[in-house]
Image 1 (cartoon, rainbow, N blue to C red):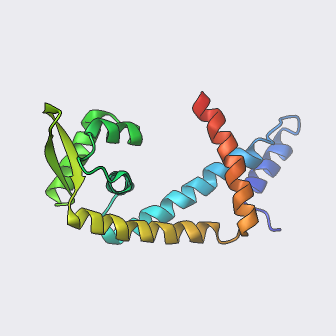
Image 2: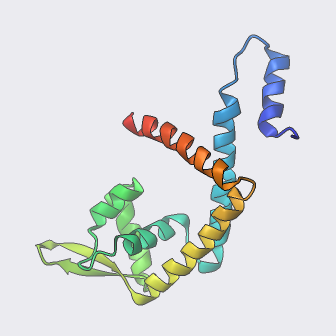
Amino acid sequence: MPKDSIDRMVDEWAASDGALDVSALQVVGRLFRTAGHGQAAVVEALRPFGLSYADFDVLNTLRRRDDPGGTHPRDLAETALITSGAMTARLDRLERSGLVKRHSDPEDRRAVRIRLTKAGADLAAKALDAVLVADEDILSPLSPAQRRTLATLLKKLLLHAEAG
């Protein structure tokens, strides 16, 4: 198998300081580099739709939840791990674009709920299809069994990180 950028980095460290254990780079470095390439591919897949990844995330979270009463902006902010102020700005932009609509919360007159418009749902579906194509391209070198193994190993790492 040819050398990748991480192999070259590890080789340079070995030549520079052979006593330094940089073996974790074999995994973590590749995770970071692969994630960066994956993010770039997703951003490129979303470009024709005029969506940022953040906008895509909001639209498809609403679509996935499919809450008939709408979703509270606080719940969207928690899912996206952003502040409520940042979510408000994002929702303002999506509402101006006609992709989401705010409605009064019947349980709390001071609050609002967010729903996709028909245009928002249609765009979310098309964008998701494009992102899934990009995801498939990223994973194309792996067999189904390798994908399952990688998913299991990454889940183990993620659970550890999320337990924090």
